[in-house]
Length: 305
Image 1 (cartoon, one colour):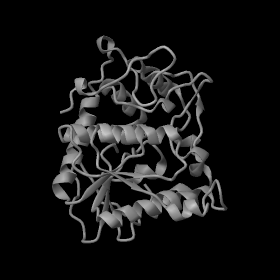
Image 2: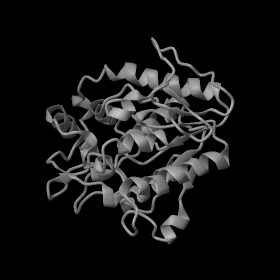
Image 3: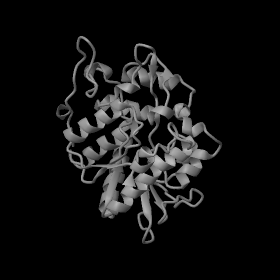
Image 4: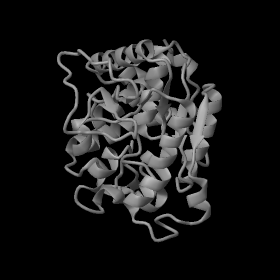
């Protein structure tokens, strides 16, 4: 198990803070930590799913977007396997991410000795056949720059399944998922025909050629994620915290399609407090979700994350 002393964190210093290490003052003080005992059960179930998948399947990968959810998932994987992640970490690089996200990726991939696999649709990017630079819609751009290179990485590495850090409460389509969610040979997802999962009994026996998405965070909420970040003091992108203009990102994606929210929350406890009072949907600032009715469900059914 990872112990807290293994995690190096910077402190707030004159002139600002580092872009990569989350300073101590962002978190609750250790002698004033809230009661987070309810997180123990969430953590235990997620670690069980990680280990069960690793036991059942030969070749697995894990998606990492550097966002809060996938970073918590990565942290749990390091806990589940005693500080080492025994499978590749996959990042689909659209080339439109906020630069701090790439710096964060490279820093922690090196620091935690991750086997980082990067997928990218270089031809679309070079030809500027994208949403910001070409004539594609946002949803079609997601297909070209996220879905397609991810499927290419899966094919090239022969992954039987990949872990993803999605949650049921994030948006309606993801609420239909299972912990062990099958896709067909074309990566299509039939959300109308999912295997039952009762009382923590998970189906792990599927037809040959089935590709799996494995979702260890499905039972977590957005507030749980931030409570766990606080308890574990998980390194987190500074983009999530309010800046001097009173803006912060609640959900992170490509720069042209992700927008900040008004906020004064510049520490993790303040984010938790803010979320308990808000009625604004988490992904309301992700433009591709709003492009057309049912667009995101169609996108995910065709093999998106």
